[in-house]
Image (cartoon, rainbow, N blue to C red):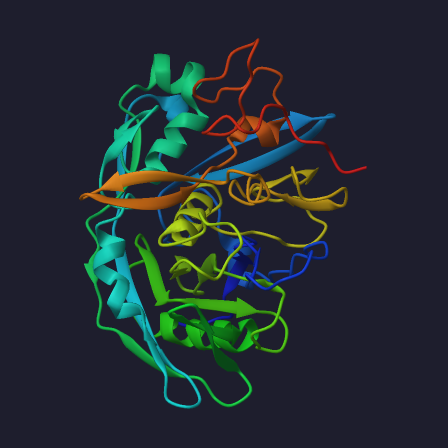
Amino acid sequence: MKSSAIACVLVNTLASVVIAQPAPQVVRLPATPPAALTRLASGAAALATVPYWSRSFKYNAVAYKFEMVGKSPYSGSSTTTIPVNILPINITFPGGTTLNGSDRATEVANSPIFLDAVYTSGTTQYADAMQRAEFWKPIVLKKSPNYHVLLGSPTMRASIPLTVPNGQGVTCVSGATTFGVISFSWFSAQLASILQAQGYSAGSLAMPITNDIVLTSGTPGCGAGFYYGGYHGTYGTSQINTFTYSAYIDSGWFFNPGTIDVFFLSHEVAEWMNDPFVDRSGAKQTQNIVPGWLQPGGGTSCYSNLLEVSDATEALSSVAFVVNTNGTNYHVTDVAGVSWFELLKNSMEVGSTKTSPSYSYTGELTSAPAVCP
């Protein structure tokens, strides 16, 4: 398989560290898709990748196309199962401290990302529950009651060691926990090489994980600022592989007490399912470009024009909610439904009514987004 640059979207579950002062407006970093993405199309010439479906909607006479993992819920009940490779990254910092992603692999496998729990939209895995919820009325409820997009029982891959050179990462102590802060540009380049060497099948999802690691676009340090907990994207030219990267986080680092354990993974998996190919190819409208929107609770500047379901909720006061699997409480993110991005007057979201509209799973989004001026 030929290699190419990775295309990715930053998680933008950016959170201030405990010692941070009031933060400036978040700035999204651009993602540059490889040329191979332009070849991703329906039909015989399509490159091998995860199963996906497409649909479009219109806003102000402009057509917007989106592509999502699985089969279309508009076509009736179906179940799509995506194989998953959990790939722990064990990171050693200058000075010798090592934070092992392999220490968290079992917790990830036992989390709601893979195990069933009870949701308003059914008893199933987390991302599938969110997907069913956003197409609930009338699509899933009436036409596709047994519609599912599932992650297969994960394959545990051997951990990959990674040593951080001087200047590219530091360790910081918060309470009893040691956290690592790493340069995003350095780490993403290393992860690109790691993923391209794995030889995973095109129809699978690669899931590299780390332990108590955050990424920064600036100089790594322990001061105030915004940090990235993960991102998702694609790689490959002879085939299109998809991946989610995330850190498993202990409490004590972020202001928001809910952004711990698999919170960042839930953010990335939900966005991967709704926007697997992370297409951001400049001015030309292609898949998963939507009307530009302001982030609720995130200021008055235009935030994004991408169908990124978790970015839409990350500035809400109650972005995380608790799901219990195997007797353990895990924290996962609320997500905006497709109705929010389509600016539908009547939301399809589970639990939404005309008198009490809802545009996210927990109901905290109660109206369609403010469109960029």
